Image (cartoon, rainbow, N blue to C red; front, side, top):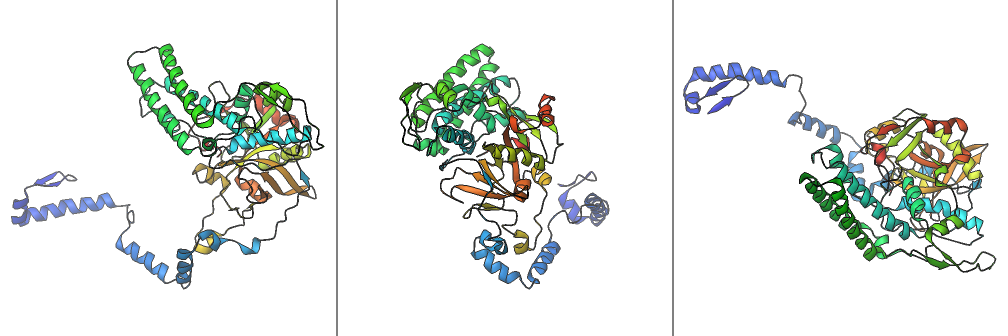
Amino acid sequence: MLIAKSVGIFVDEQSFKNNKMKRTLFFLLFVPMTMFIAKGQENASIDEAMLKNFRETFQNDPGTEALQNAASANDLRSLVLNRSNLGKTDTYFSNRVKSAGITDQKSTGRCWLFTGLNVFRAKVIEDKNLEEFSFSQNFNFFYDQLEKSNLFLEGIIETADKPMDDKRVDWLFKNAIGDGGQWTGIVDIIGKYGLVPAEVFPESHNSENTSWMSRLIRRKLRGDGMELRQMHAAGKSPSELRKAKETMLADVYRILAITLGEPPTEFEWRYKDRDGNLSELKTYTSKSFFEEFVGVDMNDYVMFMNDPSREFGKLYEIDYDRHMMEGGNWKYINLESEKLKEFAIQSILGNEAMYFSCDVGKQLDKDRGFLDVNNYNYNALFGVDFDMDKSERIQTFESGSTHGMALVAVDLIDGKPVKWLLENSWGNTGFNGHLIMTDEWFDEYMFRLVIHKQYIDEETLNILELEPVLLPPWDPMFSPDH
């Protein structure tokens, strides 16, 4: 049976072949109708004529063969490196926070944790006159993973009455847990659990290589999430669900303790300063250690964003962008980069490092440790325009915050910043464990900046009193730093 649904014709195939009139009627009615449907959709599909044009355009370009030979046999980044840009930026800085040592997050997404701890590390080194010092990232990472597990399971309980294809339920299961994060994790985890020195709770193989541990915890949580939803469907009460959740969290604690070690609740510690003086051996808890060696009010730090796709001078909050159930979401003031630079300069002059995150993979010369918008020219190699402005890159998910580092220096010439220095956590790579960022790169690829309120003007601080615009967890600005 031949069926022409567009015109409602049902024709027997054999009769169709043998009847000229039926064939004529079919084509008179059916063919014009299909032509009508396709009207306005010319070139909607790739046809032979279009391919022929592509081939001819490509083959008639006299430089194509040489470019093809070079690009197909080499790393593209080596071909697009802008050699005329080399040597234009020196490695000197007019103003720098006093810091020392190099940290290495290894094969993990813990840059946010290293960055936050490095901000406070500089303070301890200066205050205690130390040659070098590091906090235990493993200690805080342990509790970060435990708290994130609880946050996920609570999210599942809260959405247990929603269908699996609900956007929030879907988002929760896709983002059950990870090792990335941002400043709110620093505030919440340190505020609740404190800090310990690196030698008291050193790194383990799995803290430095989180992939398999994270994969197993994620799998466990997703299974537990389904169990909680099934319990809800069976009529179990919220208190019964939370009792089951406690057993599930005990399993997560067990996985963490086996893979990372079990964090100390109390420890003895002392230090030797630059002059060789040995401190008194004292007994600490992680909270008392934080109070003695850092002792800052974590709520005195203000979170900023530079997102030109949204209105500046407003307060925004991203739902679920936090590390623990009772913690705070990422709540930030969206501000122009020039204003943020003014505050950042004052912080550096005050010897205070800052939490800074950015789209680090864009225009990064990793060997030299330079972030410069002129490092690579892909347009010149391909003869294709790749340019997008910052707002367009954000809205299309082409650019977002991917990596956190400590902002520790600025080079001022005639009172204007020309470049900045970032203390990285990739070991002794780049520029002596740091990255040098031009001021123009700051404008294009900086996203998050956290600054102590003492360096911020009153007008800007007053924005914190506004009702925040609440954004969903799938907002482009949610992406955690790694």
